[in-house]
Length: 267
Image (cartoon, rainbow, N blue to C red; front, side, top):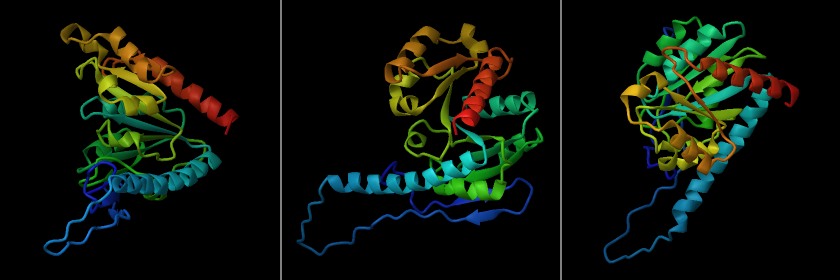
């Protein structure tokens, strides 16, 4: 088991360009394994062992993420890591964003445990995309990101979206070398999401509250959700929108262009 999140450490990430030949890239973690002990032996394992192992895994990931960040900066590739629970509407939002920001080169890395369904949806927009299937893994990590970048080859001075595996826990821990994390939640998920997953909201640069067209039909307090998010991250930007109707999406596009301008001016 992975010390940081409990997912299987034998899981392999498979990097796939939709409708092309798949190129498997095994993903390995350095995990020590305890050996059995004979009868009568009683071994006390200090609680710090798990913490040390977690720090080791994250330190290795962060080192590679720093190299990826430099690679992306050297090529002026603004990279946004989209995280959410399953069903928040990330892919629908990406489809709309790609179509409406089509005046600049855009590429996408899709993260899912299985299937090419989301990657095929993105490919249908005309955007270049690779799929990362993590198997039993519940997040993308920097090693998977490196392989995906090698397969995708995003153009210099472009915009790169990473649609992470649907999970608000583990992706908060793993730096991919991105410029910013963007958390997408929907009004169907409940007002208290920021309190339940504080680490993700603390790590994010932006929160998108999606599906606001459904507000009349669900119990969701927009103002209180904002308060909860700012209680864990006082400076965070929060933008309500509907990826389906288009309400509020222009503020999302403005934020992207602001980030792009800052990224170019302050590499």
